[in-house]
Picture 1 (tube, rainbow, N blue to C red):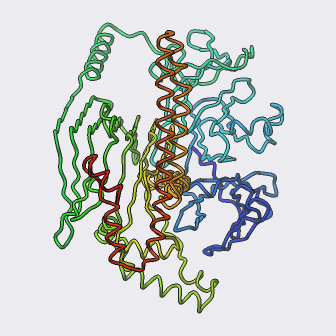
Picture 2: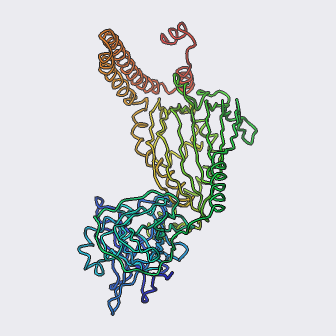
Picture 3: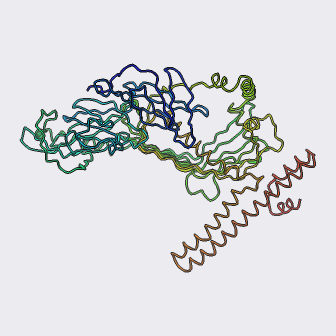
Length: 636
């Protein structure tokens, strides 16, 4: 079909409008973009000049690539459309927006009209403001026309609105909205009456709407369905929204001929093919792998063993048929041990006590066998990880930072040199010299996931600083550059919310960036819990958590017992009261103990005796092995 993306007149660089202000960017140049008010939404629109309209708004906070549309009205009154690609990348603390021309093979959507009717399309949420009457559809900005046998390169007028496309047949009341982001195949039964010239019968026009992926482009193809059968193979039929129009279409040369009556041999051949397909569908290949234990030792260059990772009861199942691959991984236990000599916390990663019923990690993946060109399709992807305890000391973190070469003395020297140069040359010159744009994304391998789910994650984090810290250690250098100190953290609850996305169609790089950004944002929101778990201030987060648990059990347990019987109500009262007293005493005494320990540590610092302070700190970290030893340590 014909391509409906005209070239348009020559133009200068795009103008970028952010909320209430706009900036002009010349071709091949860059300019800083700021918001005049913090309360405004971080949204951007783009245009090419006076005769061009502003595009729809897109969010700067969403990393990825989005295509917007600008319109140009010529002297003859014809409207020309142009697609502009905006790639949002995050480098450091700066969002970069790169504007490029959208080539034919990188168009986000393509609509093909293979019917004999004139089709009108518009974004659904714009229909109320753009579409007034059927007589003025040509003057509406949101509606675009597809003549029979033509193709339209399409993108959303407003990318931030719902991605639903409203499709209408010209000069009729037949209209239906579809999703272009979800790969599907449906049959749309309209209210338009047509006549078959072969048998002089009338029938309602039925349009097959197929959405599939073609590389980077999602394609919607509209085709007519034979009145005696469905071309979609029994797809879902949607009834029309409007009543029958009562209008008869003039007969047109049909591109889809009615099906002829099949002979006996053809029917037997079709039945045999159907039986063969069903047999292939039912025949599955299943492979199950059961591994009792897998141990991994991590050794540094000294050589010295740093960690030992143990996986217990691995269950891997793979099922395949002629349409899908199904993978399921279950890990019953996961533990990471600190193998460094003299470690205060020997177990780094483990499950809390009382949570041994379920597996610690459960991952399920369903991948479609037949994928489009350049697209890997997954019908379902889910990852579940249960609650874990994370306990680390300062020496263990320093060893891992050195092992991974994440922070070395060379990095410290380079950081110091940059700080000195910034003071000498000024901030503006430093911005022009050191801040470089990220490389453009060349990843054109897309993935499509029908349903993607990351379940919530809870981590109980504990950290103990070194007894005799070395200020030249990697962790000390890192937190010193930030301007914060290191303190003891006791069982800080860190929770990451779930992430659920339907019809996800992105590149592999954008997919990983979206997942990592989700956890980064969730982690920043949990900083207050880490700060509130410092022993120096008495760990108020633990106090509030214990009191909340006790009060909840005090009311919840009797209510649960009252539903069953009076006897269970009495047990619930006893159980709730016991939980309230236990958690209140535990939280209160723990807070008082930590505050008093902080005060005593400050008083001990007045002695100015380093050997005494070192011996005292090591003794405080010694855990009693029985009741008698605990009483003795308490009297010291």
